[in-house]
Image 1 (cartoon, rainbow, N blue to C red):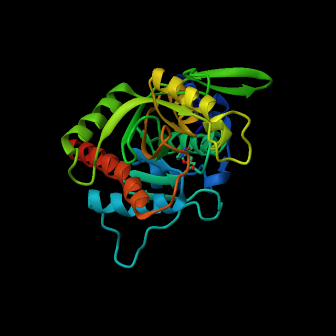
Image 2: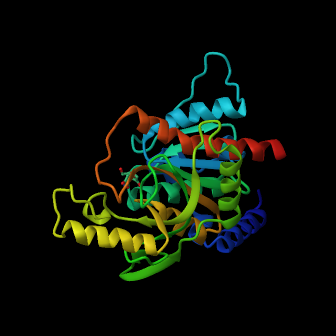
Image 3: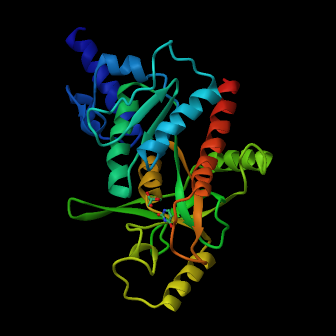
Length: 313
Ligand code: R2B
Ligand code: URA
């Protein structure tokens, strides 16, 4: 291409980035290695990922491998004979990522720093690949607040430990604040699917409410069973009661960053978590078969949504 043409391309790219509140420096970055997912800005990347519409994220690599297989069956995607689902990011050994037609299934690890790195690289990936109208899902687990274990909570808004609906990050010595609402239409669509399929197809109760996002599993979530605890059992219960009064239905560890970054980039996203425990009744999460069945519930809900959307288009 002539210099004039490529200058125009850079200008267009700059404008696209600016509109999405993304980093305009990316427009002039010749090489970009997405280190933690082991992918590189290239024509090859564009070809391989331009059809992506849904990015499903969850904590554990094993669960997201299972989700990849599950969604493959639900949307009826056929792989060529002898070809298995491959972990695209195997080389990085940080995240495990699978592509199933227009769907990406990827694990984000635990906590905001871990999901933040992945979101940065995925947002760059969909920008470089020129993907349109991408929807992000976090399908995870949580502790419920006054909800029965097995209930699915669709986050309306994420709040921090002070009940502020804000994702705060220190950038260059200053606090940067981003809003943390989930996409309202998307929340309602998911709730509607929940209503239609309640008690059928392995989907049980689906509710919506605020999600408290903590930076820790133990003290950060007011547990009495961590290595550290400098509060009483009744102080813990007072706090959980306060959560309830503030409309908090569940506690987990990534929703602030997930909603904060996606909102800022004007990308649609929703957090859907299954409660493994009701924190009003205890702290211990035990691993048992029922837990595995619980963890499949958000899969089923999201798969139904994706299938329905694909059938529409
Ligand atoms: C839910 O479960 C994990 C902690 O056990 C964490 O990633 C979360 O948000
Ligand atoms: N994940 C959390 O962060 N908290 C819980 O109580 C359960 C799962």
